Length: 340
Image 1 (cartoon, helix red, strand yellow):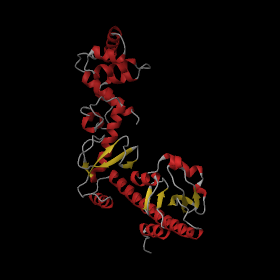
Image 2: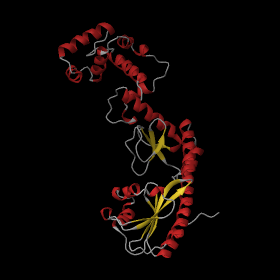
Image 3: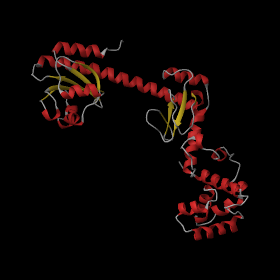
Image 4: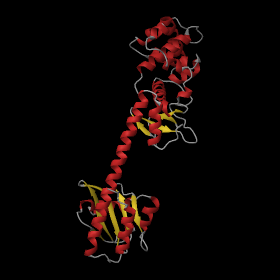
């Protein structure tokens, strides 16, 4: 069965009744319209702005138009800049998925014209439901292909996804965590974005080929986790991880104690002020004044803590030779305990 050309149907209805016709979707965005003569301000702005203003949208609720089972005549509403018109809900499987409007400021529409409005609404319901179902099928297919690429790189799957989404075969992607608008939604509150002319400053770093989407997801995940662990980055991006790459890429078999046993000593303490102090001082390169300012403690207090840390770990955080190893061990512990 050939799909209905709804624009032709709407044009034919407008010509038959000599009035302007508009069909909106469930969010009251214009889908099809045909203009005959002058229109009111609401109709003009709806078409130009592609959405209905709140005052006009409120009329639908106030007059309970979505409950109607036949065309309803609505009076002129000057405060909403609306002329008198007819409204017919567009229903599919008993659910309202749109509205059909016919402007009728002079009351020219007769009872014998109403069946044409009903027929147009029924055809619109079929077309809108079919379009939505086709979009849902495509989205399911897209999501399945994305999931396969996240599991493993695959050139054939990438080509299939590019064909489905009308992308060039050499398309590249980046991943944002948390998700950003305009991308493919991914699990874990992330989103994938096809690179256009200018790459994004994305969580996953620079663009990667579509077939390597899984790697972009991994980079975004570990970057987000590093930030949650307290990584001080110039930008929230894989490209800015620097030495944190040693942490994110560390094998699971490597323990914190193997990097430096002093980290375990600090981690096992009931109170965490020494652990926090060690992290902050080391992050500031042993600079006491900067660390004291961030910790909001007097230098005397900080010096006391530094001496205590040295006693427990054997490391002088200001100049000790082992402080890099202790620093990395504390980073590793924070990374592995971070929740995102």
